[in-house]
Structure formats: structure tokens, C-alpha cells
Length: 272
Image (tube, rainbow, N blue to C red; front, side):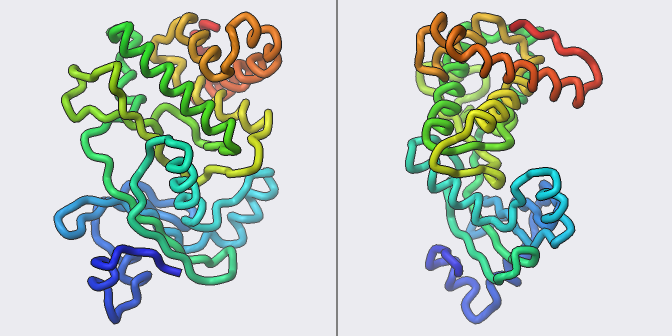
């Protein structure tokens, strides 16, 4: 199965499209576990492709033994992009995808997306906030927008599984110093591990929100910021959710601190 625009099909006419795509030249961003992420140009525009050559049975067995869902192919990513589009969450624009083979350890697949130009990750944007405070309006707007995205994911059976602030890209076409808090364009990326089910489980919600909290611990958030996130995410008055959902938020906090200790080998400056 191959889905590509007609102009791309014509470019590869008479050739093995998988072979051509797998041998593309460009800037390598990541390569591990049978897959790689590559930035390349085509007809004067830049794109990213994620290429899966098959993870092998060893990797599949290792994931299953750790109770982790293995990622067999790029199909997970293109399904996730379509799902986000369905619910109005901004993400990468899908150009094409393909898959061939039947052996889950040897599946070949790819996904191609347009490059998100003039964007910056929230990790890079917010990295200096602890020492150089942003405007109140910008921090408030971003907190609300991230909370809404998290809520939309979880209310509609989606679990990102790599839900860190580095995977949110903000449009800064007018420059980092000219961001309009009233008109944010925030994109969610890196969807290859996203899990789509009928209903997001309590456990998977904890994992996502804890990962988000862990990755935000050093950017100078205040208790007010965190309470605002909680209220928006839960769609409830703050007092109600802090009482009715107190065990959920206790587990989020505990897991986030554990992630921080494991990553940095020190205690976080927890303010919640």
C-alpha cells in the first residue's frame, strides 16, 4: 500500500518507491530501533520522513517483556495525524505514507509530512522562563492551550506516550518577541507511539500528564499556573477536582518526581 500525491508518483514512476525513499539524502535527525527520521527537500520544499525498516523480534520481545506496546511501523503515526485532524488538534500535515510486508518484525513503512516552518518547541521557548519571566498573558495562554490539547486527547481515546513539552511546536512567524497570546498556533508532534483506543485509561492519563509535568518542572511555573492547568484539563471547578480527583493528581505528582530523579539524579524544585 502506497499513498502519495500524483506528482510524487510520477517522480518515482517505474522505480521501487520504497527503495528510493529509503535511500533519500538529507539531514538525519534520529536513527534507532530500525527507524530513522530524515529532513529532505523535494521540488523546492522541505519535508520530514520517518522510515521504518522493521524492529526485529528481539526488540518486539523486549518491549512486550516490559509491558510496552511495540511500534511496528509508521502506520501508527499516520493514523495519529488523521485522528488529531479529526478533533481539531494542530499537527503535521500528512503528505504520504506506505507499508509493505506481513512479518511484524520486518515490516517496511514510511510516513512523509511537511516541515513546520518558523516554529519553536516549548522546551526551547520556555527554557529561560525560570530566570527571565515571560509576559503573564503569554504564559497563561500557553498553559490553557496545552491543557485543552491534553484534555481533547484523553477525552477522545488518545494517549500520546511521549507527552513532553519538547513535542509542542509554537508558530513564531512574527518572531519570538512578537507572539500574540490571543492567536496561538501550537502543534503537537512526534506521534509514532500514540495509542488510540475507545477510552483513555486512568493509568495512561496519569502517564501522559506526569510526563508533561516532569518536562515543565524547571521552566519557572507557579502554583497558579499548575492550578489553572488542572482546572482546564478536568473541566471542573478547582476545588471540586482537587477533592474528587485528588488520587489522580497525587499519582501524577509522584510519577513526575520519579521521572525527574531518574533523569537528573537530584530532587526537583516541586511547587505543587
